[in-house]
Each structure stands twice: as C-alpha cells, then as structure tokens.
Length: 281
Image: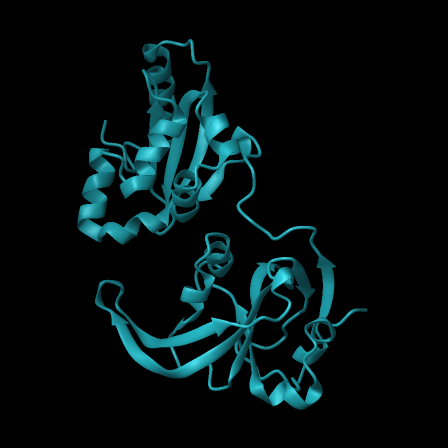
C-alpha cells in the first residue's frame, strides 16, 4: 500500500521537524473541511487554543469521514505565536503565521488518507509511536481523487442541506448549477438553528424565487425577516453561522401566492415552528 510520506517525500531524518494536525471540529467535526471548501482553512488553522505548533512544519490532514482524512498541505510556521482573544466569542488563544509549502500542492484536496487514530491527541509528532494503532508516519493513501474536493454542484432539491457559510460562498461565487436550479422554482424552505434546534419556515413567492430569497439571507443572515433579525440583534451578527438551510417543498412557477402561502402555513403547523420555533405568525 502507498504511504503518504512516500508521496510527500519526507525522509525519516526529517520527521522530528513535523507536527501532524488532524484537523477536526470540537462541536462540528466537519468545520475544518467546510473552511477548506470556502478557502479559509489556513486562517482557521492559524488560530489555536494552545501553542500546538512548536515545530517548523505542520502536515495538515482534514477530517473527511470516519477514519478518512483529506490532505490539506504542508505549512511552514513563521515566527512565534502571539496571544489573541475574541471577546464576542468568549475565546482566547494563539495566532500563528504560516506559509503553504510547495510540496505536492497539486494533490491538496485530492489525497484521501485512511488512518484510524486510536489516541486522543490531535497534534502528534510525526515520529510518534502510539501505544495503540498505527504510527502517523505509516499512514496510507486510500485514494487520489481526480480533482480537488470543492463545493459540489447542485444535486437535487431533496438533497439541499447547507450551512450559512456554504450558502454565502454559493451566492458570492454565483455557482451556476445552484443559481440555475433555485432561480426557476418557488417554494417552502427551512432554516434551522444548529445550536438550539429551533426552526424557521419561510417561502418564496410573488416575483421571488428561492435563489433571490436565499441571496438576501446570504448578505446578512436575516434577509429582512423580523424574527431572524431580532435573533441576530440579540446574539450578534456572527450567530448566522449557526444557521442551516434546506428545502421542504418546491412549487411550480405558475402557482399563485395563496397556494404557496397555504403550503407555508401547512409546514409551520407540521413542524410546530410557531409554538416551538422561530416563526411568530
């Protein structure tokens, strides 16, 4: 089986210069992967709760699925970390500076590593010999994708389930498959708060299609909706990153407003979003 280090051409004599970063979110395991998809992984990695990168180089592996990791690149740590804090998030930590090394950059986002990490440490030394399981230096490549992982093309209305930060990029980059699909339907959609589980049922009707409505949400998180606007005013603008979007029902463009509003009320009743969620009427 092909080992990752053989492809990266890291000799055994250099292992002592590397930390491995198994990038996985504390609350949302896929958070670093989402950051990678939207081009913000480097910045995300550079902010650490502790001084986790005391060595010159970081080999980044991003959680992809159970025991599967995407190669995120090799980074050189430049300078010493400086303390930072984010009062609005009640977070303190360290800010690193790093630069992406020119090492198999064409394989970033394409190499899938199979590695069952049987220890808790997320920042092991590359030469580490764990009590259980395989050494990091012996990680093997499961597959090499034909192209770099990216925000996928629109896969169908019944498969839409995206976070705010993904919606923001879809609208910002005007991704054709999404714009084309959502610009041609009206319908009923759901916004879920991932922290509380509360839900908001909304609809696109009249002169608006779902693309237009969601484009408004992508700008500020509330899209002018009073209930969501009040929530963001109370919790702070960054709270929008806790929202997740899906589609409950699509409607023909020729259907009248009364029909669509009726279907919206139906879903509010089914999901009890007036009583337990974020709908007020």
